[in-house]
Amino acid sequence: MISCVTFRNAFAPGTESAEVLQHVRVCDACLDHAAGIDPDIMFRALGGENLVPPGGVDAFVDDVMREVRLRSTEQTLAGRRGMLLSWPRRIAVAATLAAGLSGALMVWQHDKNGVAVPSAMTARSAAIPTRLTTKPVIESYDSANATIVEVPSEANDTKIVMIFDESLPADL
Amino acid sequence: MAAELRLMIPTQEPVEPDDRQLVQTIRQGDTEAFELLVRRKTSKVYALCYRIIGNAEDAKDISQLVFIKLWENLEKYDPQYAFDTWLYRMVTNVAIDFMRNKQSRDNAVNSNLRLVKTSFDAEQGVVVQRKEVENVFNEVATVLSPKQKTIFVMNQMDDMPSSEIAKVLGCRESTVRNHLFNARKLMQQQLQKRFPEYARLWSER
Figure (cartoon, rainbow over the protein chains, first blue to last red):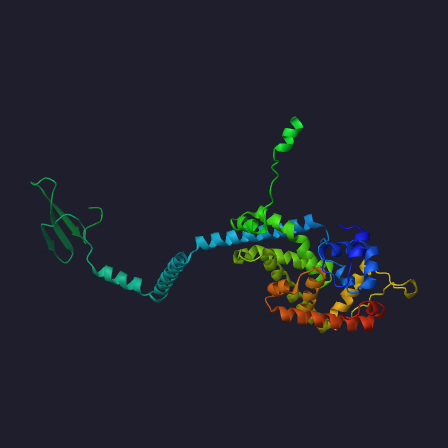
């Protein structure tokens, strides 16, 4: 920095010299002197570079970096969320949900409207004759009270005859 | 002999990367490089904000906002232009926006600006006290529009030439000179009204 003597010799109204301005920004005595010659120097003497934010530069930088890191993390997470649920995946999930819901709705409506259906089905199934045996029937004889069925035995020589007679005692 | 040899061996001091190199590194995701850039520019950014806004806490908040915007918009920086010009444009835009919003808030509540009592003593001649000048500036500059104040601050306090201010604000140099002329005129009027002792000093050139 230039000395006070150099400053006072070099100072002229409207100066743009960086050295002169730097001096006037740190030396109160020379500012008083210069303001008498060029009042415009008054506000210029305030300068602009020697100011520090409240709390100091370190705390300021820490605050900024904390916010920047927070935003970066948020952006990364948002990116990942975007990748997990890309548009085709979102559409697929929506379609699955829609299909599930409509299916559930149809079943519910079916259950609600079709209370008579089971009884009808029961009646229909009652009309179908009960099959008594899975073996092929060779011959059967029906009367008013009894039914006689001939079926093949395991061996070919014997035939089993089953008689179903409702008039006979149960313990016969 | 050994001392002579030592003198002959060039010392390898780490060379600090310039702003453009730093930006390049930051774009590759290096947050430490960004921290270095913030540290390097804090004083400049804060000082400009403080001069424009006139309040330390608001200036700090706005400066932090500027750096966060810088981080988010660094991709938009074109390295063929000076980094400081681009940074200053961001600072002025954010600060001017803040001032405009603040003005509208102030108008809404019709707040009265407090007059700063100066310790000027006419008998003792002109005693310029730095803090006092700062208070006077903050008072009289309230009549300036945010843009006028920004231009005045950049020109008078940051020693920025009109051509550079025009680049920062994206306007013509003649517009900058016009704003400067009007700013000086308005401040002169305010000085005469509020601080006549300073008005005698600060004559219109």
